[in-house]
Length: 98
Length: 359
Image (tube, rainbow over the protein chains, first blue to last red):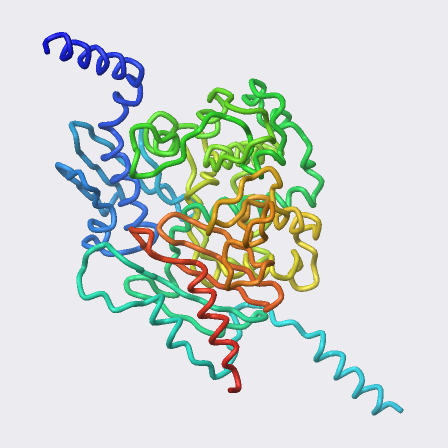
């Protein structure tokens, strides 16, 4: 039984090592997706806040999503990561900030 | 004699007069019954849950005139709607203009225009247009975000420079031999286009070469930090403006007497990539457009639509259909969050409505 558990653990560790890059990136996806697509929903497609909140909703909840309407900037936080997107220009729409 | 000539001129004049949406789309006043089409596209949703068919816009154009148009709030005729991967086919159309200007040939290696592809010297422009670069890629959105190359490209590791992210992928197959749908391949095309133009030309090129000549004024095309257009995903257009791309394609690249796209380019877009494997019910890849043309003895993907039907598709149900023989262009924008929508069913109902004309 103990040996079995060790084997499973070793397998998991091996998988995590193989996928270390993807696993490290994963927590950032939610806030980046939400910031970018919410920014475009509001400032490119021109929809209301309430609609855009529903539009970007995923199965994992965000801890916060803030819109700076004046500067057309959006900050999203989730899974411990924070991402920002900002409107650039009429033709260029929104983009994630570094 | 003069009168006879005048009458003759009027008759031929009428026969040749093509309608163009300049500046706005003319309306076709034909009295057709759209009930079955609307019932399918705009079902009454009792709950606010994100399930079922959720059409935002439906626009049906026949021979350059609006036959039917309907929107669901908050989308309106003025909304520049996200097209997602419809952007890919529009990028291909933009490349068609560039090809007509002699900027590249289909057999040119991509590395000639985009040096980072020097790591993959065998990949040609035609291979990218067939989604057959052979580069290692995983195209999945929300169901497998951990392993998805497209999610990494758009939102994490690749977002600063999407073409460079793609060019740095490993090789999984020989170039031109295997179809594998990849948003990375499209962004390499966007990077290659940049390399064909002078540094100052690129930013304005989609407008200068394509949007302005077609009278498109709603376009927004987002870029990555490197400044390259996100050709795979981030073009926004009003439904009426996307239909202009459709009409250009339906008329074989001609726009108001000018051959904006080479006819041979449209023919390339519409030729199936012979090495792709048919998947039942799924459109077959052509040159960055999707075809109803059957592949390898299989049934055609949408049995209720003519075999020459082709389309551009995007995530969550975005679509632009072209039916050349019927002179139809159909734009559908949507927010479908499940897979219940069927291209074949919509096309079947549209064709049935047209068949009822005058009945």
